[in-house]
Length: 441
Length: 130
Image (cartoon, rainbow over all chains, first blue to last red; front, side):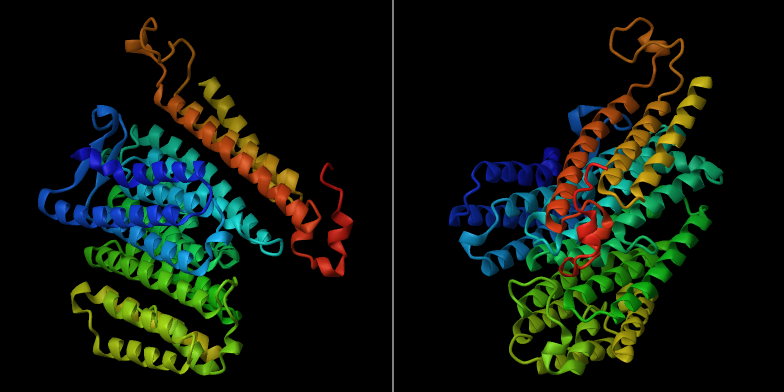
């Protein structure tokens, strides 16, 4: 039973290896990937229900006792994130099948997508800091591969900033693992919580927290380490870009939530305040970066940066309501941002970057509607709005205006009382932030 | 204690050199900078297992292993990290070579210059081995 916790990692890896061995794109290959992703989604949903009844699923790999060996832990949050990862992967793979004819599909795209999913799933499941490093590396290596796999000579340069910053980040992460082990004597998250609590007030603990903040902030795209994001995401083909936009930075946010929400005690007030301030700058700078851009995918990439700021700010507040708001918004953001990237790809199939707004004819409608959709209202409404964009953008941009009005009405009614005041504030802040763009335009 | 200080100095030198090289414009220097940085990180892990003088190796059955062994866990970590670093270095090499063939230059100048206008891209050509 507990061995099932490894399934979301093992299954994609096995299937990906099989796909590498049989590289010729066929209907069978595509349906296999679709089935596997659907099965993973079903499994993750079952896991959510199961954990709600029976409590977290803990797998001690190799049977080693808890503080020594590697553990995989599936609690409600990781199960929800697993479901989101599988769902996004399934949607993006299906979009890719529809967009790319069988004969033009790159034989490595699907295996790399599955490896990427395995790395993401492992980072959600792991209960060990060093294993998290391994998960990040699996994820990053596949993402490096996908980034340049189908890019042309003009686009490949966008991969270099992404690669360089992540290489430096990985080296720093590795060294930080070492520092954490020498300071706390363990790399197990659950054990780290206890020992960090005992060390509260020690400046070395604060230093460790600062280093971890730097490393995970870099992966998440927090100010001032965000510049790699808007240069690299737009060079991807639409379905892959949608998966990156939905999942990759959110892994960084998820880990920030885990580490700064649980491991570092509330007495490390300085760390949390620093995180909140960095998040504040991210919110503003990301949106301002989008102001000068005209292409859909570039604008959406800058918006990811800004929205990462909202999530991280909620983590930096270090309160129950803050964490609830962060988790709520992460879930919402993953679904909606992926849908928006797919919508951007729909608008101009087969081309990267997305089309310039000036080609849309109704410039003002477009400029208002695009930024207004990813507002934290409720997830279902966001999805519906994104689906309407998916359906309507192509034919008549006038439909976008209706979506914008819809989103505003939603906000005006304040249809999310249960998430608490923070989500409310975040929503208002986000709308204000995004209003900057059409204003300056 | 002295061994630890030496390790710290070595990490500092490797780290500083790696960052300096990573900030350079030449592709080859970026590659070597990354190699130095990952070695610096590995050395940090090695130093974490403590001063090895007078202690036995952390293998099962070594004399005195139960009481006076060097902590073996960081060494297991380094082993993993070296393998991962190797894979990443291989990818970085391939990407830099691809950029060289795509853009006709082995430095960042060629990436951000317009190849249609020649200029920086042309002057950088053939400097891969510098």
